[in-house]
Image (cartoon, rainbow, N blue to C red):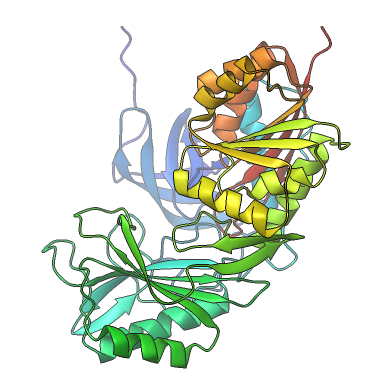
Length: 459
């Protein structure tokens, strides 16, 4: 077997041109075809780099000097951008980000899906790509006797203390700072993950962008919260729009944020918000899109691709709390939603009732189990909509879609790589990908959502 020759050495310097960006925003350069990942490098930039680590098939480097800058390079406006791991692309202008994301989607469709000549439209971005996130969940730590709250430093568990985050709604910044100050006033200690001691693990704020309603969630290691009544009184006085104060208890040694027990300490179990004409009840644990403005753009495109006339039966796999289902129900004859998380289905039913929507039904279970069962019972679909997690669709679900032969499939994706893989399966099963529309749900990060319009080939 021929031994792979690595053409670079650790601690050596090389002149390179960056060709691409990785999924976490690093520049990709090659020396004799050998890939090197370098933070802060942008496509088409020429630079001197130093190799910091060499692996079997790739290496990592550090940017030493830029010979030629990208026309899209900008100074990041956030003062802690280089330390914080929350954003990856603030050094790339917003126009440049949209160009890079379109290229990313086009490239994976070709490389992974072997799908050529499929129109990938320019990315639908935001007019104002700042202050868009409606939910903040911020870890808390003790530092020199004071509480700090912020995001983790890149590739570490060291918290960068943060007063403002430029991609968070300003209301959420305000809530986190006030709640942190109140906890500090009453001597509530932060959770220490090494010693497994302390009380408060995370502060979470949810904000209804349309309604202005606020929910505060204190995630604690212990069920006991010292000075609970005083803390609630101060929070509700300092934050007049707060409608709900909730405690979630997570006693485990884990990186998972939420524990199993959630209790409303004050106010309502839900706050409300709207996307378009649909109103949603949001609890502490509800999955609800963090950028509602772009969610409407995404769902409007999904609705357009579904091509509904009012006569169709639609299945929404991975329906969550019914966000897409309820959009579809406005134009469909009947919508069937399925989701594995029981609490999400309860939320979906509640949201249907809240909006007076009677032509949507929801079932708990794995889409790849429930949908074949519906098929056996004669519930076929004219249109199937899938909005899977990052790992993409389960193969059994894709095979069911192929067997059911709906006229159209609308695939809403949060991971272009698994979208490309799944489109290849559907293409081989008798479908044709007509077009793909990327949507920028998370400006200044490397994430890109996309909607694909897929139609059954004429047999």
